[in-house]
Image (cartoon, rainbow, N blue to C red):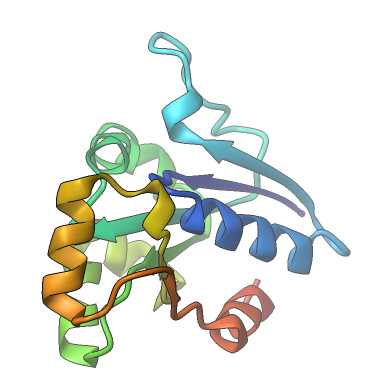
Length: 162
């Protein structure tokens, strides 16, 4: 099968998780990974060749990255035509808040279309954040420095669904 993984990533965590998923399924799939932030403005991605799609969205302060939201809004009708798998990256620990972030990341229409929708954890990359972001994280968590909560078992389980 041919799989295209679309993602957006501000600090690299979602990109790393997309790559981990690709590595897990590439033994039996042809996988293309597409950073939607690198798409040229007038270029429409290939929605015809892949046999399934995976979308990865990072969440910052409870909201999805804007470029992925616009991408999903623009191409929902194309994404619905083939099996669809959705994942969200974030640092929320509460399952209720994780669900709220999933709902913020993807429209109800896409969530209902998807074969699987999961929350795969995330990371704070202290050195990549600006002063204000570090201040917010320090106030919210009481900690400073890199923090990681990537759910590698959940990533393997998610990839096995393909």
